[in-house]
Image (cartoon, rainbow, N blue to C red):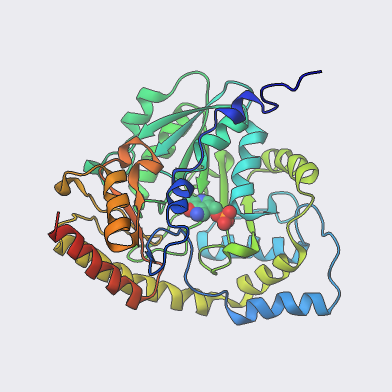
Length: 388
Ligand code: PMP
């Protein structure tokens, strides 16, 4: 029998590759490149955290763990959520340790969506949200947060997008790629919208510890919101653990147990040594997190000032480690800007349109790179702007 023209499922064939990846491929083989493109800390995981993983291997912890994660880690996550974010979850039934926040988002969407149900995806946002909704059989309905509102969504925009098929809204604050953080008042307005339409909030709180000027509020801590919040977080950003692939999700029991069924069949459990490392990170990692936060804050202040000085107007991000300057004054599209900057000056930034249509006219610059590299990148960008 003849081979089919494609064995791929339609929804996979039509899935577009990530705009970020596509852009990084262009740097392959180039030397002397400074990357402000990556979305991960430049720090190495703190030593005590690495040592805990080594110790776990020496102690022979090389088997599967409970599907939801080792009980001591879930207990520590519950304590951490309570102590830092004022929200309480039962470690035995409302927390799952996942393979990064990425898996948490995936299983959350797969657990809650019936075919054709809609999810409001606020853009600009992390590149995986809309594709994960599609892969879960849902329909992503993108809502564009505007630059005029510092890329914070207004409930009126959500009102225009909601239908009787809407099941949830995905929010990430502090945001990747804009660094914008919702104030408590802004969150309360979104919470009221969710309650009025009986929606879940899938709250990606992975940058909750990287907040520079304000106190962080979790969606789940707002009155009446714990029951409709799926809180996703992890260890990648604050503890510089991207390669360990460790995250977690907290949600009301019915939803958590639904997610656990998917996790148990698809994943079994997160890596055992990573879980031991994460436990140490939660118990004894605060000092390191504070140091890293201090360093990011310094770099944020430097890069924001430099970008504004060279005419790339840039809001001062309240959290995460990204700036999202406007490149409109150059007359270039964000793709052209990023490509020409790479060709002429070997600096990588990510075109804003990779994160949604309202990102056009902007580029994402990560400041999770050393001060020396940042300074060199700013010198090169200044030269690039001057010769346009
Ligand atoms: N959410 C956001 C907003 C992110 O920026 C990232 C990583 N870039 C993730 C989730 C995924 O994190 P993890 O490494 O925990 O899968």
